[in-house]
Structures are given as structure tokens and as C-alpha cells.
Length: 345
Image 1: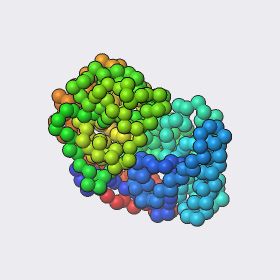
Image 2: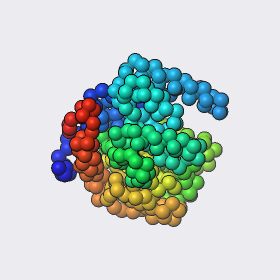
Image 3: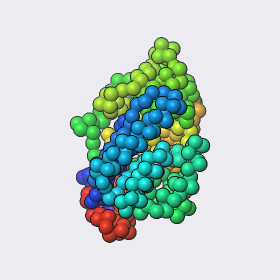
Image 4: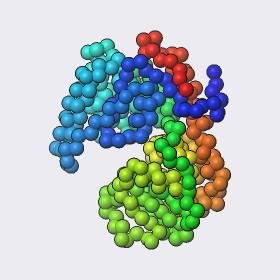
């Protein structure tokens, strides 16, 4: 049955009778939303053992030990886990072999695109073929999963109903753009700051660890503030006050985490040209090539078309929920009987 837009008071779900989700992260909105979709508890595991290769290896070992402890204590029938690093699904796979359980990977593109993980591709293929389904964040990953003989479940965006009492209340004075940035290699930070410099009529707040790029807050244009890491409540309040949220990557297939959050609040988005992002954002987004002059044009478009963009952003999650319900409905019809899934909205 095709789900119609607007029938949902809550995000669609497909509850698992006995499951747990594990992510080796300190916090993760996407993992939290995925766990909510399947009505399973989320175990976030992140042991801080310092910097450097040796410290990272110690961290992996500590995370593996904690993962084993969680699985022994919880004894779930189904384990949903992030696919990176591959040592996490390895531990979960070993547990499933011993208990007759299942492993479902929440598949992130880095497993395919990052050279460090490519030696593990044959193992990923094996897990994908053995799983009842694999959660994919974009069609690009889904095509790989299908070619490997697996069943992709496309949960491309998972906006939630709300974040507490936070509502979209863009400030009325000078337009504000909130650049959500992790300062990763795929984010065009220098080009973006150059574009911001050309727009003194707008304000820009940049989140994330700017020290990764050795940026000096004092050297920024007067309309640009490097906020660094922000408390999550402050982060969400800042997003809710922005004319638009800005997120950029030169990887055209990925779904940025901040887009889920913006759609939950109802904030318009300025972002790079991307088939994945166009599918999710539709008329709630302004899509731009990654070049300073193009970004300047995108900022002005977001301001000039703000009323229309905000209206689309406020309703976009309902269209996403309709597509998600179709995916989950197909999953329920084809799930193994002993997964005990039942539809809930």
C-alpha cells in the first residue's frame, strides 16, 4: 500500500522484538534515529585512549572488549551495527555465529570510498549477503549492496518529530547562515570562508573543531564566527535561528548528518549539488557548485526565497516519512517470520 503524505504524526517504525544497535561513537543523531525506527536500544561505545596510531589501536581493543560485554549482557537476537570500523561488525558477526543471531549493518559510504577499509570489502560482501537487509543512506551504497547479493533498505533520511520544545524561529535582523562543519578533508572550508568574506551583509556561524585546519578566529572576517564544538542544545538552538543551514562536501553521494537535524526542525538548507540531497530536500534546499561565486549566489537565493524554502522545509519530513513507510512495509512483508516485525506509526 502506498503511504500518502501527511498521514504521519510520528516517524514510521518497524519494531524488532529483540534487538540492540551498537555504534562506536560518543553521540550520533543518525544512530539514535535508526534505533528509534526499529524500537531497539542504542549502545554508544567510545573509549578515549588519546591520539596517534598506537592510541587508536588501544581504543579499538577497548571498544571491542566493551562490545563483547554488551552482547553477553544483552544477548539480543538481532544486532544492528555501524559498518565502520570493520572490527565492530566482526565482533557482532562472531556473536551471531555463536548464538544463531543476525547482524544488520548500518552501511556508511566510507567502507567503499576510503582506501584504509578497502581490504575489508570481501568481508563486507559476505555480511551483506548473509543479512536479512542492509541499511543504506544513499542509492550509491544501495547499488553496491544489491550487486553484492544483498537487500538494501534505503533509509536515506530519518527526520524525527521534534527536538523537545525547539521550533524554527529565524532571527529577523541580519540574515544568519549556520555552517555545520567537521573540518574533514571533503569539506571545502577555505572556499566557503572566501565566499562568506564576499557577503558582509550576512552573518555566518561555523561549528566544529576549526583547529583541524589551523584557522585563527581573529583572522576571520567580522561577519564570520568560528564557534568550535558546541553543546548540543546550543547547536540546535543556533540552527533553529538561522536563515538556512549550510553543509558542504565534495563527495556527491553522502547524506550529511546535519540535514536530518535541519529537516526535523524545518530549517532550509544550502548545500552542494547532489542526487542524494536533492532526493531528500527537494524544494527545501538551495543546491550549488562548490565555488566562491556560486556559494555567494546561493546565499542570496536562500535569503530572497526564504519564505518558500521555509514552507517546504517545514513539510519535507512528511514526504520522507511516506517513502520510509514504503521501504519498511516492503521489509515487513519479506522479513523472516521469527524477526517478529509489526507495523507501527
